[in-house]
Image 1: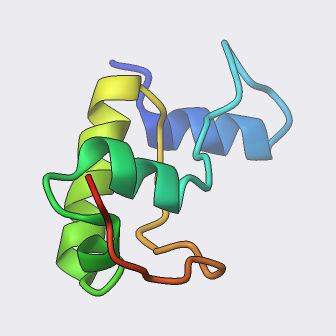
Image 2: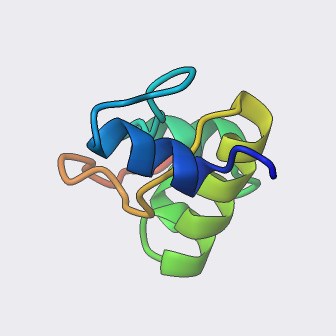
Length: 81
């Protein structure tokens, strides 16, 4: 049986991690800028775009969970590049 993310989380919550603590970083704006094909201002306006960027980052970087959100402090402005 594979050691899944859910099993890893359950083990950590029970205080008996087998290998490591699951990782689920809060990286909304960074992910939007680095793992989306859209401008950050566009990604911040759409739940599907945010989720796609978060899933892409999770798969590439290798963490275990994500929160599909745009940074609460992000103030949209015109991207120049």
